[in-house]
Image (cartoon, rainbow, N blue to C red):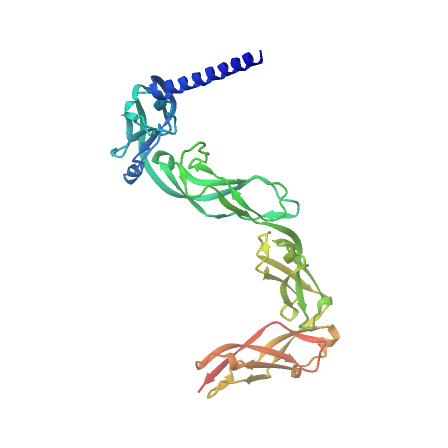
Amino acid sequence: METTKKDKWLYVGLSILIAVILWMYVGKVVNPEVDGTIRNLPVTFVGRELLEERGLMLTEGADQTVTISVKGKRDVVNQLTAETVSVTVDVSTIAQAGTYTQAYQVSPSLTGAVASSSLIITDRHPLNVEFTVAKLAVRTVPVQGSFTGSVADGYQAGEFTFSPASVEIKGEESIVNQIDYVQVVLDKTDLSETYSGDLPYAFISFGGEALDGADLETSVPLIRTTLPVVQLKEVPLTVNILPGGGATAEDITYTISPETIMVSGAADDLEPLKEVSLGNLDLSKVLASDVLTFPISLAAELNNVSGVTEATVKVTVNGLSTSTLEVDNIELINIPAGCKAQSVTQSRQVQIRGEKAAVAAVTQSQLRIVADLSQAVAATGTQTVPVKVYLDGRSDVGVVGEYNIVVSISR
């Protein structure tokens, strides 16, 4: 009984083995002819570089697929896939723009003992491919930015910088010639520091519209975009009061317009900035009242956001008396070597200022005019030179104003 069961399983195993051998024999030795279909074979256009040399390019129809039906030995047909079958169209002879219909070449790349010549193409769909050739254009256009986000309170966004600052675009002439610039869009909120990053861009037409889906080649895929973000600070304007002409800071009232300006810069640069000085206000040059103009200057690392480049200072001298004296004590010093000089001006009226009693006590003899000729014009003849007026023996009264005299220089 045990021997009978063993014989039964032996017969089953032999039957399976014989069946496999027969199947392999039919498949490998007999190798019958079969029909097959290969779908979605991509079409490759060869000679496109020659089109570009002629100022042309392939546009519509560049991405196509075809389907072929074949008949051949089974081991050949079984090798046919999109990787082993190439479909090509030669466009190297095209010399002008237009729409073309051409046949395509099917080329199997097979391995094995059975030659691919035994393969017959029984059907093609479509029979031919249609494509369009257009004029090619290359242009370089600038990069622009659009900030659609926001900065944090107390901060300000500066001007975009881009790297590269322009992009080369290549494509169909009718599309390329519509493009005015490429635009990057930065959409970040509450920025409190400078942004820098690589951003995509869109093609913008001369009409200001985005050309969505434009099929173009570009020199770079992304633009390095930098948007400076700086801190803002409001600081007062001040002047440095220089006593003179018998007046001190306690003797005047003044106003500055504008009183403050808005300054932007890095936080470390703004932190020590408490005020912006306009410079010196010399009271010896101010009579009863005056309006003076000062330029507003900042360090190079700071920016005047207010945009006001000048400030006016209105100053009034209060409670002091003035008097005018005729001064004829004129002295010439530092006369140029080899020259002689004499004052053509014999006397000048000089104004003094101070407390009423002090002013009244000043005499003409205490005033003297000194002309320093070291900076005089080297030419001979008469010329006007600035002078300094000294008041000797009094510290509570001062000379007000600026003066000059006429001198004659000869050799």
